[in-house]
Length: 77
Image (cartoon, rainbow, N blue to C red; front, side, top):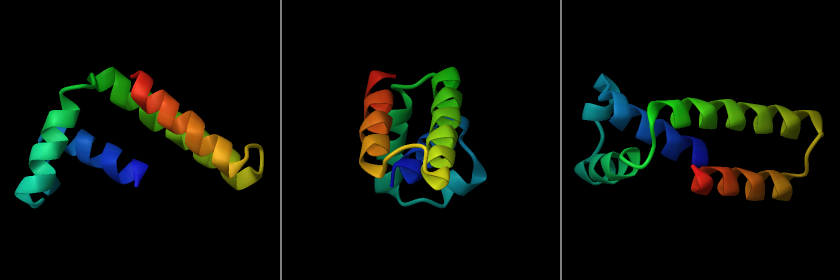
């Protein structure tokens, strides 16, 4: 769900073609949320989420800890 939300925020920020196919509810929420993030912050979040995903799949981080760290990182942005 976190990656889905980040993807929607990215689509809203860049006004992609895929974004125009979303429901008006998703568009409105995503645009509002996108205003809270700079392009650089979105790129950093993608990098962070990639690293967390890699650590989860290789067993370097616990699933519960990964979720907590990811939420903390998103809310701190």
